[in-house]
Image 1 (cartoon, rainbow, N blue to C red):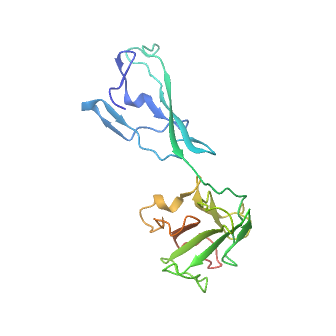
Image 2: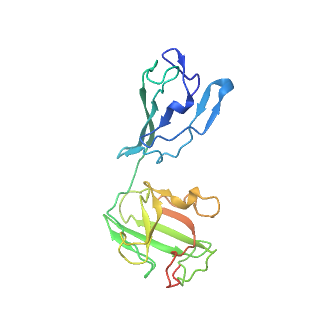
Image 3: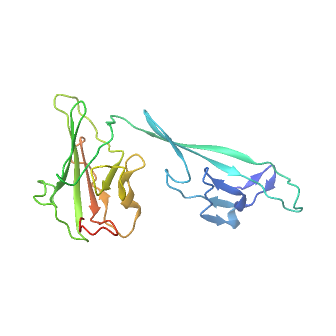
Length: 221
């Protein structure tokens, strides 16, 4: 935000916040009167709308505080709506997927068939065993069998790891969340990432750093 002036008066950066969560600015350039906010699309309590487009909505709020006298204000508060639009096409929506590591694939009947598999390192075949050492990388592949259907582009909104087939059980770890975001992708100390470009439009591949649940004595990774 540049030229931080409201009602003809220079405003304080500390009076600005982003979203219902009231996130603060990340940098301030006083020489250029510039305030910068840096936040993920799903952060600061932004909201998401579908289906034709991904529309992330939030707002920039200005809440003035008393300046010359503690009981008076000389500027008015304001709320400026902000929307980020991303066109979304050929999306495959599904019911909740209850995925378990035994067996290492799970299918869900839609109009066709959706499957998850653990693959070997070069993605050529399924992994023949399910043992992992901490520090190794899991190669996870999701496919939708289109059959006689027109070509589909596969999206996975959420993907949860648990110790039981109940996706709502505890402990649980969201591998994919926030409408398809790779949670580990925000961390700088893991190699987790989507494989891009896609090998096929109806296939989604991702690498996830192997992990275990803290306090679990079963040695499951």
